[in-house]
Length: 373
Image (cartoon, rainbow, N blue to C red; front, side):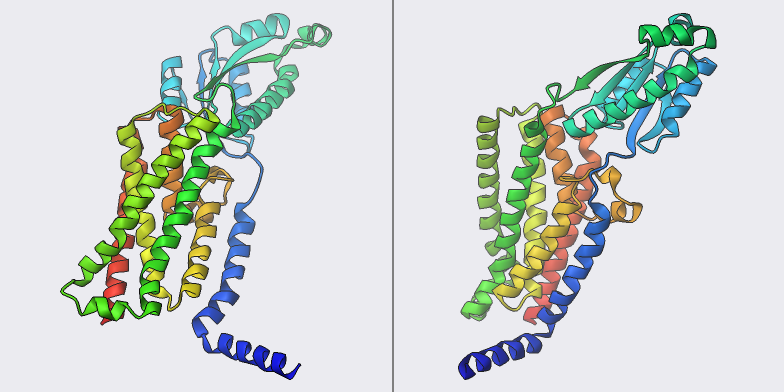
């Protein structure tokens, strides 16, 4: 018993002596509780919506106001034609387009039944189904209010309604695998690259070989590139293999360009390995590197839009996601795979990813050089 007690005291002393790990173990769960507690919600809210009202009557305006006043939808504007509504969906500006035909109010006043059309971006099948359910509920509640009094009794007996005809785009079968599997592949490669990058320099330190490398003719930048480029090539090949395997197993087909996909992959791996290198400069041991990498991974994954749509998060967390490289990778891969989105429409994903990658890698190099000095 004395020997066990002595060992326990020794471990407590070791934990207290490592000030960095002690602070990290206390602070990390608190940050995770606060941020993840606010970000995790299964509700579908603030679905971006555009409305094309060709009826232009008080009845159609009242119906669109019912949608605009509902927290489930964010009506970002109205358009004057069906083509413009389609364009907004193709350009990824909205999730739902609602088309109200010119005869909507006339039919509703005549027989208590008015037809509208809803176009839904169903890349995320669950979100599309939930949003359609909310829209259907609004239509059912509005039908009695909008129909004239003299047709309400007949409307009730015949079961008339505001009928919503739907078109699901990009994922018409609403297959969950089509949405989730590309994201899962991205998560897998994120874990691999962060671990590889975070362990690279620390492993050399613990083995005592870093000092030996520093007395060689290699410069500091050459040393970093020599350590990271093999990981970059390995991760790139592994990601391609996993994607092809996912396509074969889950019958997911690439709708977009291979060049676009490979460009996004390269930028993301560059960023992810740079973050791993930054973690490696912070840690003194491999154990510390694993803890810090895990800390970053939890936030990156939960704030990437993989589980919870970013639109559903509080405003403060939405701002935090802007510095999360995984967010841009997740969105880009899904857009290329399911929507064949060309690079010109992915510029708002590629540019932030490039800037983040450059900034993270530069900070890692500076931190590494200072540490060696």
